[in-house]
Image (cartoon, rainbow, N blue to C red; front, side, top):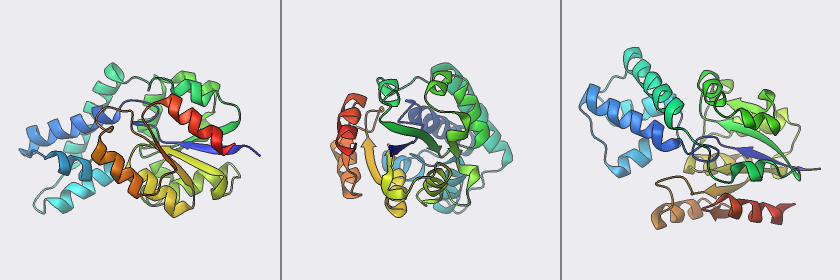
Length: 224
């Protein structure tokens, strides 16, 4: 039986994580006069669903309230930047075309968010169907909880030990660990490929750390 690759989307298939983080940073500064340090950005915004970003920030800043108007500005900013600047990670289609594996996507985006992103990534339909997309609003708890990965594996009729998560965030790797799945850290997106971040990825117990999709494909070959 083929192994199942569970792909994250932002920062792995699309070099988009930087876009969403920039929207949050700009909107927080403009609307709330809040400027985050790089460490705060990594802890509160990177690799996290918008719902959880909101919860993180309101907990971190006790007086902060991010109402519906603020979240609508976030949605509008993400659509504006995403439809203009979102590009696929170089070499990702070459990995998806590897028919030694089955493929699906488990993303921290909502179904609505993922739908408009996929209008620009229609080529993915060559390798998986819309039924292979799993979004955060399909489960009770998003990453780092394992719920989304469990849902993907169950729907695709795979046991966790036969699944490989390809992600870019610590939450991806924590969720994979909690689900009993192997994980690969992709650090090729802008801002991730630093010694400090690679060390944090390694500490989660990932099976490998790759800075290019060519390296990802080579590593996957060891799991066939």
